[in-house]
Image 1 (tube, rainbow, N blue to C red):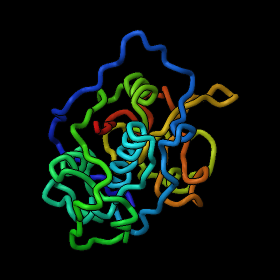
Image 2: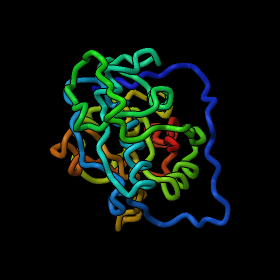
Image 3: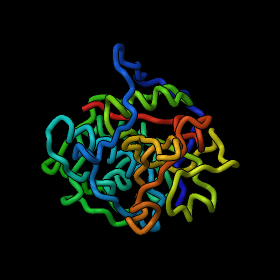
Image 4: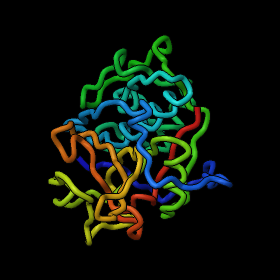
Length: 241
């Protein structure tokens, strides 16, 4: 279900600055560092935005604490409606970070498990794993900024235009869709790295939440350095912890 909600508000949050004296590595994969939880399953609920939010926060928490803990998407579905999110009908990533910040934390997946449906908010402060102190937006449509962020920060929440059969039925290889939009984004995922194939095709490693039966064990290789393919760099952000 492709239900990332796009609004017309300009992004006014902290901006990512490319670090000085950093050489961009040829490849990055945060899975090898233990910053990425296993592929999940959003089911028949338009909660992609919640999974991107938790995924990026899981990575930052693991980076700081050296402890990878799955966070509760269901809490975001149930509890963040006052921040412009609509549960299984869609939502946005930055407002979700803001909710976690204002709420003083997010519970673990174990304590507040995913149900793939809208329910009453059952947040329990005793089960908080981590909090968000702020969040950072990456320069819109700048793939170079996105790649530097991926190389230096960790997993990044991203959004794309996924409203194509070629994406729904993707199974392997580097994904490219000629009719993809760079602005009409409807789906969010987690960028966990990037690399280049033996045939010199650049790609991002994106974690989806449609189980490991979809795509490349639950992942898609999105074309990189190809004119912001499907809007991969249009609306990327990450939390600070």
